[in-house]
Length: 287
Image (cartoon, rainbow, N blue to C red; front, side):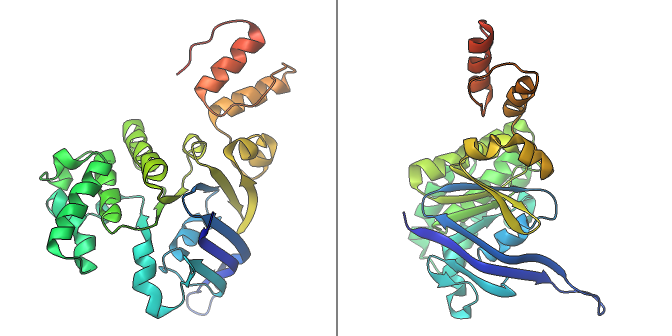
């Protein structure tokens, strides 16, 4: 599998104000994201998750080291537009990304600014809205939509620019459970069916559990990196980093602490129910 994003010895420092020293976020950070993968990035507040995301499409540039997107140096000004075509960004508040009064016009905004011809824009907009399940709302006013629907429109606006990678910076933080589910299902479908590389920054462990890979940042460094099962099995380490595993994993861990023999770890409610059923000889309802 080829590399979509390559972070080499990244250093970054936010500048200080009025001669005060700046804030160091990264020193010698290394990370790769493979094409077609779904990577979740976790970490406590101030660990650098959002700062790292902004390096992926040149919103921020390294103080030291390099970030490459599809082989292009993000610090190369001549490659800026091409980099941003390859990496689309979806932020926490969808209202900050919606710029038009009609859904389909909003989704068309990105391709129009890329100079895409009108017939192709129509095709891209319709296709993007279908991919996120919002085609039937194409003539609606965005401000009348739910939070989850707005976020799906924001994702459609990114898809219409045909990026190879989508970076989502806590896209469900402001949503209710239904909206969170809608957005995550959309992201999973884009990754699994369309092969779009996904980098999801989240503080919801159940969302991270659905990724191919989980990276945990702590004090500007990669503290844990592996499959969700590998990372969330390290419950004590996560606690040391100020994080928690998914609730089902935490439950199994707590039972083990009480010397109850459970044969394996779990990542979700269904696995938890099966493990408890096997351990106690009862049938526990799943999700």
